Length: 447
Figure 1 (cartoon, rainbow, N blue to C red):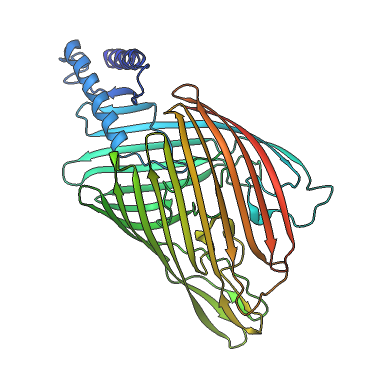
Figure 2 (cartoon, helix red, strand yellow):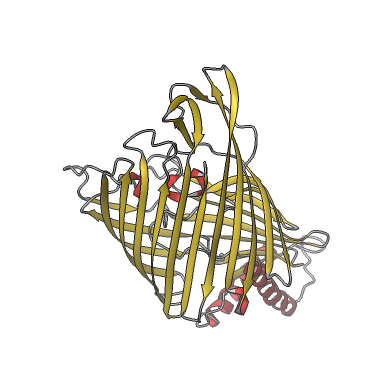
């Protein structure tokens, strides 16, 4: 047993030395700890030190490739782990990582009633309580684990779990499960970002929610994805747990849902390392509610379409965009999630219910002044709910705008500093509107 511990420690030291020796490289260099097992009796270990060193380097190389090949890039995605445990036969690797994220923000000329910059929650009427606000927040810090199994029959199998500290009331620091899924043979089962979201269609922001026209939300799902034409063409179809947020009025009541949401997409990628793409997405919904007047259950059909993408025009300049239109799709527009606007009673007949038409558009650009070190980005985003037979309430949300500009500086491989300015506005159906401004700075250290 002592020999086992000694060998494990020596392998760890070799991995650390290897990583430090290559720390000047931009390539991903994890610390790989090889899991060893004794051979024969407790006093025998017929493996030469030279062989252990060779196996350590082999494990480091294979594990690095696994985690790079299975990593997803895009909005709020985690970096590769800095510590990986790998078996001697290179069949299994477990990565553990995360980051500490501290954001300090100051709202002025209008304060948003939320820890994030959500135009829907901008107050219409200014008063002494909502003119200014300062915040310091570390709830977006993250912990994750990722296991990769090289199965001879199934190919790469990925199991991923991550969490932040956004599970309770504002600044309560209650742990929250973000993702928990297993992926193999193109199938993803568990909790993940909704299939309707194009992860690479928006740039990184300090603001945790991001552009209000974007659609970064989580769902429990069963999804299938297929890539063809050497991964240039990708298609996906999913069944996702529905989340309904409507205004029921006096004549209708909420009930349990019976049909999953069905999002789908087709994406075409091109260019060096497929850095550019365009995606067409759609989602179908069937929302159930109870008609108290007729004493019977009824349903409403919701639907949405989206065009999104990312275009790397050169090594330094990248464009991002998404545009979505539909009816009854508040979970798929960031600003409208939980707003109660999937449907409302008909303003002309309260005994009838209707889905609300809505649309949103976002466009942004990023300039990599020093690639992988210093970048500047900015953009504009707007979300709007259309009138349908008039409007149900004069203080009902009509439009929200979101303008941002930021700079990110990667001090080291693990340490990032950033600063950001945000301006937003909300307009109601009756024409009244309010605005808000926020400046933020961020410190993030990956581990």
